Length: 186
Image (cartoon, rainbow, N blue to C red; front, side, top):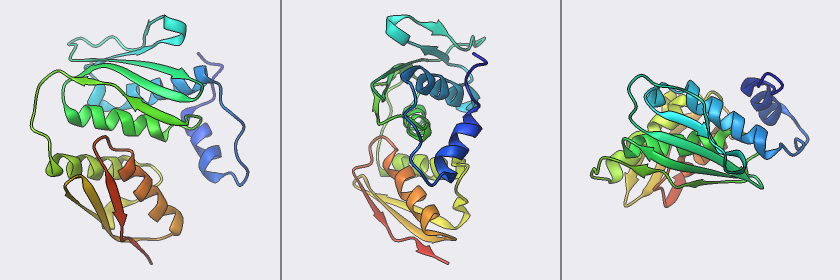
């Protein structure tokens, strides 16, 4: 699929541009989500598949399979189906999908194969991970706490844009019900 621009090029245009970017076709959005998931080490043991028009295409063939993520995009809605090993993977997959330009919303319908306890500590851990992985944010001075699925962000970032990015990243994590952004700019 060499006719697609690089993920970095599209992200640079989406973040750096002053005008709204033109609409991105559903097929390109799906390919960008696939690339983001394939590049993430947390999904090294998962099948990553595209589902354009009902067809499935293997994107990665892991030696040891521990999950499968199927990606479909319909009118800008990114839909993630399949199974992953843990809630952390489900949350991370959803956040990575949200980062892809061209998507309007993300439906994270991934199932978790191993039942596990979920709570504020797990949400906090995933929000921290997503903030750390965001290439447009230095989260070294951002603290995260969670109480009854209400995430509070504290700390300092260098710009208003970085403050907004941190808040959006927290909202992208599955299970977050409210975000309080107390990050200062300095």
